[in-house]
Amino acid sequence: MNLTPQRGGLVIALSFVLALLLTLLPLPEWARFYRPQWCTLVLIYWTMASPHRVGVGVGWVVGIAIDVITGTLLGQHALALALIAFITQKMHQRVRLFPLWQQALTVLVLLLVEKLLALWVMGAIAQPVPTLAFWVPPLVGMALWPWLYIVLRDLRRRFQVS
Image (tube, rainbow, N blue to C red):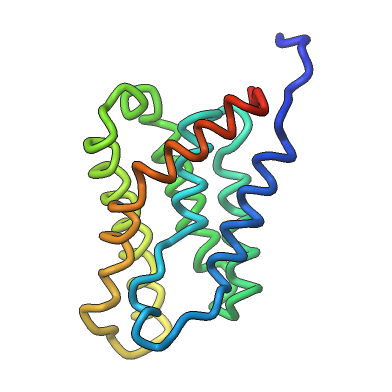
């Protein structure tokens, strides 16, 4: 049993709020296909860095928030983010030891899993099949992972998030 108080809950919450705001940020039409999956990237980081605090429940809540804010089918993102959090929790000890480029490849796979679940839901509700541009955000997220990892790691260390 851990008797020391846990610190940094506000830092974690604010990072998710910032990710939600970046998800809502208006972009020009040509740039919409390049919008990274900010909430998923932040969820992956915090689940790897602090799996005892951020996990499936947080993934579910953030997913519901994305569904409500973006107007998608209620539960679509919640299911995907809960699954991503579960997978990340199961392999966090191995992935944390990888160099950043290997972590980025692992993150690419997790982002592709989220996109596959979204595609499955779109097929289940008879939405049209998206174009190839649908698969660009995971590649952008993979490219952004090293920088996002470094920024969030520095925040975690500065505010002593346990």
